[in-house]
Length: 126
Image (cartoon, rainbow, N blue to C red; front, side):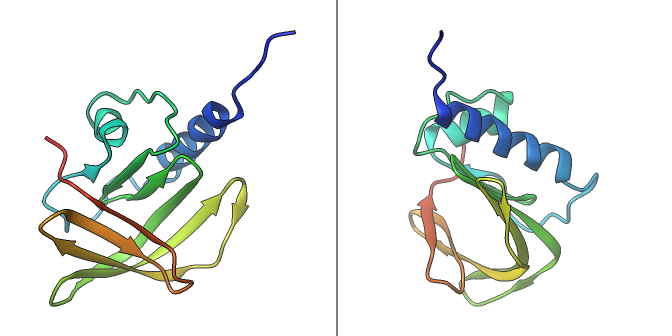
């Protein structure tokens, strides 16, 4: 019986959810995509290796190897970035809408949530 890498399945499922759930026209507020090497490759090609350190931040939301957070509504500009409502699906479990804070620094964007979860900073994809 073949061995299946569960991480690849989770990443593929998370990416599929983001692709299916993304609105046809997301409001543009970022100046491009930000992410890890694998996240940026996915942003350009649609292909992912399933790496555990997968991170992609774009106008549609935040995607990691284990969770997808879809941005909802319009972003509000702050002194250091943006705030925006996000609905997250972590390993098949959907959470309530909450406010995500995107903070820009010299290292790129970081996303933080009210529960203390912080993703990034991630550099701009080239």
